[in-house]
Amino acid sequence: MTDAVVESTPAVPEQAANGQHPATSLSTAAARNLATTTKSVPQMQEITSRWLLRVLPWVQTQGGAYRVNRRLTHTVGDGRVEFTTEGDAVRVIPTELGEIAQLRGIDDEEVLSALADRFEQREVGAGERIAEEGRPVDGIHLIAHGRAEQFGSGPFGDQSSLGRLVDGDHFGEELLTEDAPTWDHDVIAATPITVLTLPAAAAAELVDRIPALAAHLERYKAGRSAKANKHGEAAIAISAGHTGEPDLPTTFVDYDLAPREYELSVAQTVLRVHTRVADLYNQPMNQMEQQLRLTVEALREQQEDQLLNNREFGLLHNAALSQRIPTRSGAPTPDDLDDLLSRRRDTQFMLAHPKAIAAFGRELNKRGLYPTPTLVEGREVPAWRGVPILPCNKIPISSARTTSIIAMRTGEDNQGVVGLRQVGLPDEYEPGLSVRFMGIDEKAVMSYLVSAYYSVAVLVPDALGVLEHVEIGR
Figure 1 (tube, one colour):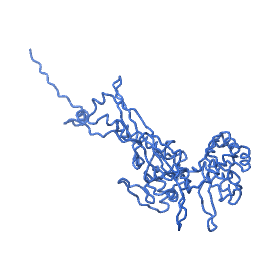
Figure 2 (cartoon, one colour):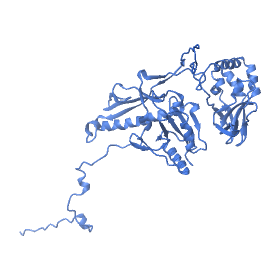
Figure 3 (cartoon, one colour):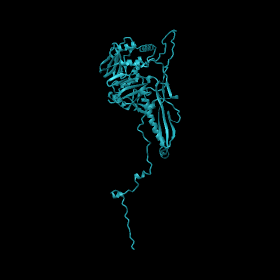
Figure 4 (tube, helix red, strand yellow):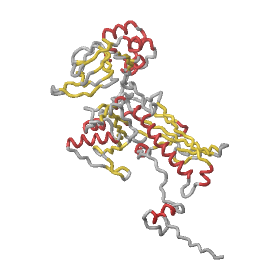
């Protein structure tokens, strides 16, 4: 038998068959199966600079509440009135009439409803005069929508601007407590305005017909006669510049009997991590630490948002109405920021949405102004009059493309704005933030309760101011 010789032909590599050169070393795709890649920690787009949390001085709040004691104030100040609409018809909410100083404290809704029913709606065109200096006060006027300018006679016979009136403002309420008052300035519509007016005759008829209303106004006049300083606080009697041995005045500092208390708010979530993930996939990064890090970042973002926008304690909703001013022409000009800064001493910071900062920069460019930036925590930030303007994207932008700019003074010793928190919590992870282990369920999932406690307090009204109706689209 003849042995058959079988010659084997070497396999042609695929690369050669395709006209490419054969591989002579291990490919990178294959090598990555045995290699550990260089990787970043998990990233999160929601994280911002959170300047508000960084610049606020934090006060230890034992017992979960912080009481702001102030001197007794006889008049809190005028508020802004709100309205309801049905089609083109506008009506003042009866209880909102309590925002008028002379009507504040009336609890009888029937009395307030009787007043609200007598307000008459009218439309005022731009440039039309609503009140004329020297003429009798013809009624109480509520601005439901629009903007008006106030002008008075200057010391040399010229007209000077006395400020603006916007949605919710009112004027003419002195006719409730004064005899035959007259307008001491002009009020002219800067835009078309919807005004609700309670005629003087109707107001007088209601006071005569409703004894409870008349009695309330008498009490108001009696209380207003008490001595007070220019801020409305009970005056402290002091004698100065005297000679000889006169009888010195006696005095005491009266306190507000119902001071405001700020309770700590809370933001919480439950973080869940499977034990298999924590056991097997902890190299080179600790899965639990990374999950917790990003959860804490999200809580801190929510905390800053609440400090600005919460209706109970947020800065945008708790600025005194006397410290809220509108812009002169819409866009944030240097004049507007000067008005904002002039309303308080020692303004330390301003907060604005980045788009508002850009709009302010455009106004500076129009005037050829180039203010010097300043350093905050080693970072260069925009500034005006030496006051840093810090970016904060938590300040909302309305559908009309308007926003607000906040100015504030901070610190307890400075009678400013302070952040509130409690340190020393059980299982504390960061100051004012705790992480508590809640156990492992039947699916082998670990749960952790992550809680952040916080609030913010304004110690005196002029510590915080807001520039409103800031247009960012121009």
